[in-house]
Length: 424
Image 1 (tube, one colour):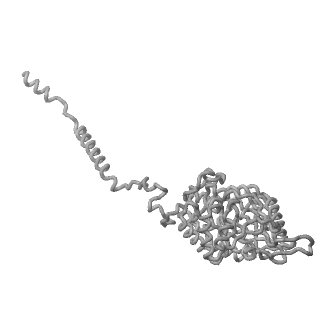
Image 2: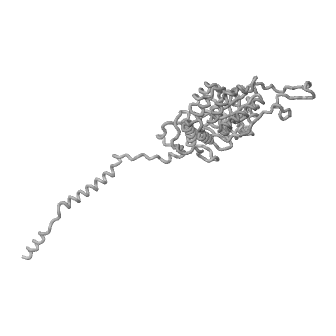
C-alpha cells in the first residue's frame, strides 16, 4: 500500500512544457544565423574605399583621384602651370573666398607648392570677378585687392628715378655723353669731337610705356589691351590662354615682349619656369629657351623681379648668350642698382636699355599721373624716356586719361624696340 502511494506521488509530478524546448531551439537558431551573417556580410555590403595615407606623401594623390591633369615633371609647379594653360579652375580648398585676400605665407617663406600657386590664381580671380563691377568712384576696395594680390608674386620695386646724364664732360661720364667740348674760349672757337652717334629720336621726344606682368590677371590685362595705343605689353610666361591674349594685344597696336621671371632677394613665387641663381648654366639656358618659344616674333625681353639674379654676372652671361643667339634686346627693369645687365649685354653684343620710372608702386591715380609727368620731363630732357607700369586698376584709369594728351604736349608714344634701335 505504501509503495503504491510513492509511485502515485512520483507519477503526479508535472512535466516540462514543450514551449521551453522550442524557445531553446529558436535562440540557438538565431545565434547561428547571426554568426553566418557576420561571416558572409562582405558579400552583400561593400565597405567604403579608404585612401592609402602613404599615397599622400609629397602631395601625390592616388592615381584614381587625378582627373584633369596627369603629367610628370620635376617642377613642383607643373600641375598649377598645366591648370593655367588649360584654363582649369584652381584647387577649391586653396582659399576661403569669404576671407580677405592675404599672402598665404610669411614674407620670408617661399611659395613652393601647387596649393600656393592655386591660392595665387584664386586671389587674382577674386580681385577680377568681385571687384571689377564696383562703381568707378568706389576705388578703395579695388586698390586694396590689386595691392594684396601683387604681394604674392611681385617684389617691392624701387622708387628711384633714373636719369641719363647726356651733357657732362667728365671722363667718368664720357660713355654717356654724345659730345665732348674742348678749348671753350669763345663760342665761335668751340671744337666739338663727336665721340658717339648723336641720339635722334625724331622731331618729338619719345616715350615707351611698358606694361609688365601682363597675362596673369586676365581682367586687368584686358583693360590695358583696350587702350589702343602703341604701348609695349610684356607678358609673363605662364598666364592662361597666353597666345590668345598676346594676339589681342597686338591687334590693339601693342608691341609684345617676354617678361622673364628671375629670382629676387625676397623669397617669393617667381614662376613655374622661373630662373634662379641655384640653377646650373645648362638649366638656365634650357629654361630660357623654352620661355622664348612661347613668344615667336618678339624683339626683346625684360626681367620680372630679378633683384638677386641680375646681380649675378655668370647667370646674366647665360641670358645674354641666348639673347645674342636670337637677336633680342634686353630691357633692364633695374629692380636693383647693382644690376650687371648693361656690362654683360655689352660683352655679348646685345642691344640694351633700362627703365627710368616705375609708374605705379602706389596704386593711386594721382600718384601715377605724377609719375607720368616725371616721365615727360625726362623725355623732354633726354629725347626719350622709358616708364614701366603694371596692369593695375588705377594704372589703367591714369593711362586712359593721359594718353589722349600726349601729342598736345609735343611728345610721342613709341614701341620699346624703336628706342632700343636708336640707343644702340
